[in-house]
Image (tube, rainbow, N blue to C red):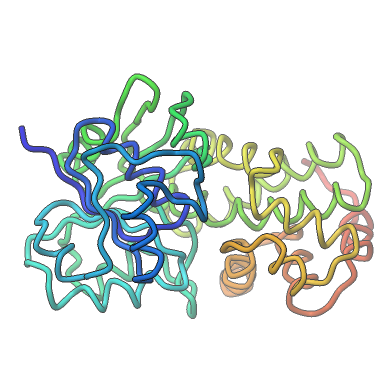
Length: 331
């Protein structure tokens, strides 16, 4: 079987998944929006900016040309930041065939309006377009280094989930399939907000007790929003929910956690973003999650305080005090 996949986004995650697919014997085409960056990838056969010392397999090619991605005629795997998701697909759309299948490893909501990413795809293409979301506890560098990882592939069509699982599954990369697209999307988006909160708490010098409480109560916030939007509660206890939340809140490979740490230690937002130097999805997700919670009347106090730190200038110490000052209630 001639296995092929086209991946949009030459950041750390897109590159790691491209390395994985090519290592699995797939002809893999990786697209990056910057010609200079793509030329560097081609010349050095590694992503020196985001994943240094992770050489490209022979079956991995790179391009900066969107028409070439369409001509590759394979499933699309989108790995661009959430705020660029709709724009990138809209630029690619004129080149695509009607029977295109679209997956993404992007985590977040639309940049304006809080739409889930499958809703964006449906509006750009068709509600019948096969779609899938890849999510779960996975850092790009560990996937590129072939360290054991397990993820979830949630898809609108079982055969598409199976196709993606076949392309990505390996002895060191275990794929589980799911039909709960909404649950997997919500879990992947909101966990980044909670990772910022956990980082803030650690940056303020609070201990493991605080972090464990934030993770546990944060999971409840994800469940409340996810179920309201149509997700299944059991999804949030799996890899794309609890698994991804634990990973992102507890390890400093997480940009969102590192961003929160910097805020808790007194850095301002702009300096923290500059220091990290990569997309911090939780910043955008905090706003959209907060607005969704308000829209549907869902109690999400950790998300609310994180939003106020990021968008209303609330001091991190005051945000924590506000959480601790909440009235007594049953768990």
